[in-house]
Image 1: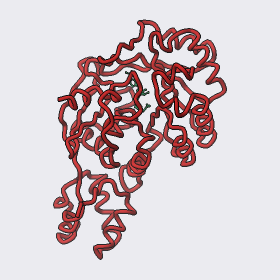
Image 2: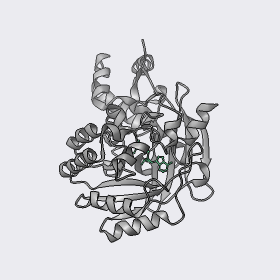
Image 3: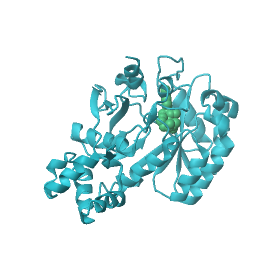
Image 4: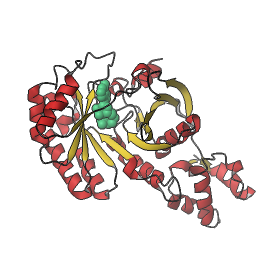
Length: 343
Ligand code: SAH
C-alpha cells in the first residue's frame, strides 16, 4: 500500500484518517501542529502521541523532504537561490529575497512548465509534472530551516504555471493559511499567471485576498501570441475581461507584469496602446528588464524600462520598475533546473 503524503492533508482530512485508527479527533490537531508549527517531520519525535499511534503513523504516512542540491548566494544583494531535489529525483528552484520590509520567498509550483513562453528558461527544459501541495509548502519549511529566516512574503512566481496546477495550489494556500498551522495571511501572497482565463474566474469566486499578478508582456494580440502561446487560447481582451471580473469580485487591485523587450514590446506605441488598454482598471504595472536566457537573444536596452515607465506615467498609468535581484546567481526562474536536468 502506498503511504499517504501527510503534509498535503488539511486538518479535516487528517482527522478523518486518524479517526479510522480508532483514535480521538484531537490527536489529528496535535499531529498537524507538530508538522506545520513545530516543523517536526519524524513521527518518533512527536512525544505527546502514544507509541502505538506513532507506529501507525509510520506505517501509513510519509513526509517527502526536499534536499538542497545547490545553494547559491548573491554577492550583490542577499538573494539566495536553492535548487531542491525532490524525492523522485526531479529538481525545482526556490529563491529567497530580502526587502526593506522583510524576506520574501519565490516558490515553484510545477516541475517545468507547459506554457512555452519564448523568453522563459522554464519552458526550455520542458514539463515533467505538477508539484503536490506538500512539495510547494516544503520549499518554505526547508528554506526557513536552512536559512534561519522567517518569511513574511510569498510569491508564486518560480517554475511552473500555478493556475495549471490549480487544485494543488489551492490546497497549498489552505495549508499555509490554516489557523491551526502557519496562519500565514494570504494578503502577503502574490500569485502570478500567464493568463489561464477560466481559472481566473474560478479564483475570483473564492475571494482569497491574495494579489493576482498577470504576465501581460504585450498589448497587442499578434505580438503576444508570438511570445506567449497561451494568448492563442485566451487573448488579451478575454484576459482583461476576466481581470475586471476578478477586481469586481475581490475588491483587490491587480498587478500586470511587463518585461520590456527590445524590438518586441518596448516602443512608444506599445506604451500608449498599453495605457489605453489598462485605463479604468484598478491595477498597477510592474516593469521588468528581461533576464538573459542563454538560449534566447531577448534583451532590454539600458534606459528602455525607465522610459517606458515614464511614458505610462504621463498617460496616467501607475508603473514601477522591478529591482533586479541576484543577477550574479541566475536568479531568474528555470535556469538552474534546466542545467541540472541536462546533466
Ligand atoms: N507561470 C507564471 C509564473 C512564473 S514566471 C506566469 O507566467 O506568470 C514569473 C514571471 O517572470 C512572469 O511574469 C514571467 O513572464 C516572467 N519571466 C519569465 N522569464 C523571464 C525573463 N527571461 N525575463 C523577465 N521575466 C521573465
